[in-house]
Length: 374
Image (tube, rainbow, N blue to C red; front, side, top):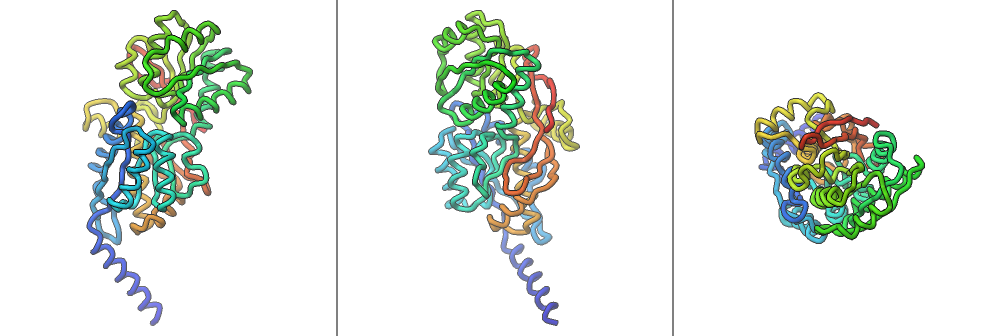
């Protein structure tokens, strides 16, 4: 009899909770303006489509509307921290999506960790983003893997022997990815040297004059699309005939808009391509995205789409809007089928094991070259 009353009490409490809940508030802190605004805008497009296709989450048998509150971190670390504080303290969100970049994700993640609210970044790849943090997760691969894949590709596909590495010292992501590339490339027996610049620089003549004097066969650009495009253009104008290689920071339409014919042949790693068969959900997503926006889907939008659905999946499994319960459900995620691949989180880690896509610019378009699976 006592057990019966306990069950009745639990069911009653759940029904009362469901009746009180009018919406699920999720935060989104992305780089909507500033030098890398393309990343944030693509991510937000992915979430808007995800909200249209899945506007509610089921709690205690009730379909509860989802409200995503978007704030702009302007691509600035201090602003990213402020955005995280406002989303948690003022907007009362139960989880946060974004930021895109590692520098901003590190800053926002520190706040989310302190306040014990789960943050899921779609594309921040620096290992430090999740290191020693229980509430921080990502929907993408990590730079240790990306650096190794890029070094292997340079050595085997480009037959590279000497690489000039252009490092944006203002970005944690760039510094980290350069280091992981160097470590792996050295193991193959390759040689390399570094030159440095800062986000927003537009004239790279000094760096390129020095670099080209060393006769590299490949230039590795682990930075972001605007500077990558300008470096490629100026390198070709100075007579460089070798290969260009980049990381996921190159993956934006602006790369081709800015670089034009000068980025032709550039290869880069990313998380998604419309022609890559990454999961059973890839093709339906491509069709829905193309219908919604009349353009090809991009990696930032695809992974933001996955991050949104990952959080909703965790909420439904937790059957709770308690941020700690949502975090625990996220940590227990296993075989979640996303549009950019299946996500499982290893024990005590927010880093999923994911495939990587390598793209090459051909005839002014990003074409799938290969998919590399762990």
